[in-house]
Length: 498
Image 1 (cartoon, one colour):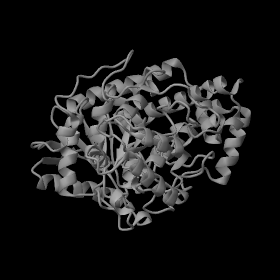
Image 2 (cartoon, helix red, strand yellow; image 1 turned 90 degrees about the horizontal axis):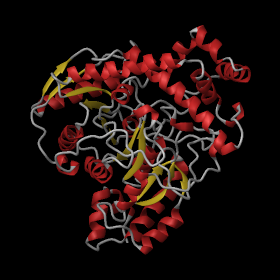
Image 3 (cartoon, helix red, strand yellow; image 1 turned 90 degrees about the vertical axis):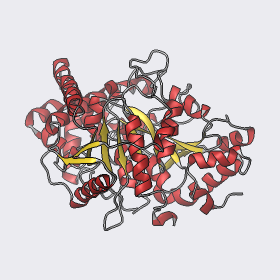
Image 4 (cartoon, helix red, strand yellow; image 1 turned 60 degrees about the horizontal axis):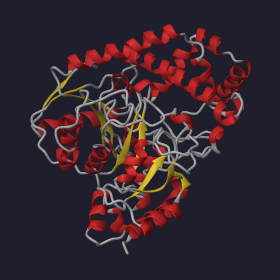
């Protein structure tokens, strides 16, 4: 039997190796993960749909002998559907929805040998950079329970940081892998557009801005997971060339002398928190000490243009999600079916025209081309992942007066009036002010990663982001492996789990 301390010291590949050599059984790993979940989940509210008994049964019956054979795993309660398990997307309107078919990504995770233990907390429709849905209540950061683990993959990040599983499923449509990775001291890579399958039901997620992968404590787990899942499925709208070699092999390879630009500019012109600036400057010094060419540059993208284009997508996709609820409710959705902020976003989505969206979509292409030119000079762009350390639980929720305004707007369908008033721009700036660095890679489709290299004076994680050219996950994994060796973070553990 494996002890809690031994379980905590193993990443996913190490667990799988012990299973392959007969030193551990899948049943023992499953029991250890469930015991950890039962000990810490009441404090962090990360796992909202436990599937412990089916996991025990699978462990006893035998799991595929893949690279993660027997390793406990958690799915995000949004995105990749798992047949027979609740799939609420953090919404009260979907509390009774149970899909009948696995997503292709879930099939590949299972073929890799992962044992699914449950599903993790997420904000309604994965819309927020914090995880505080009315349906399940807030997920909490294991490093400090009064702070958010980020979002929208906040439950996944909290679970991995607390040691429930070494790796967990996550998705990123505007930073939702990288934001919680930064908040929880984890490694989080958003793959390139088209790298990971989105079928069988969806051709693309969020017009191609969203992609799914994992959050992990070790770089090699993330690399091996991408090896297990990368590649198109039937009907995929995008196709990327296969990597030159397995991503797992890249983790131990020398990255060579990289040309890395860094920037401390805030995309919306606001003040950058000193801790986040320190995180970038420390990373730049570390990179120089490792032999890379490092230069400070102005931000190579128009933060306000990116914000405007992203919010057009955000509003439109929310409106589409609300409209799609009719299939599950048997009637058109009403304001009371979803959270007030969600309903307002949907109202706003209906105030824009197809021409508006087409113009915003051109911004994606403009920035993809601009980054293509940028990467002719620099291999990577280094920025803060966030503009501030993890915020407190409830800090970004509407205040009482704002709640009254929301109710008034939603009751009378005043989305058009709100848009014309100019309030949208103000709300947009406020909503993205703390997370302004991540959306651009979603619009351009580039791979990007958050690396946990800094902790604040208060003991909260503060990640830094690297953006690479389209399809260059290999470069990111080589650099991440080098950084992990130079400044290890795996054994940094929140006080919650000792």
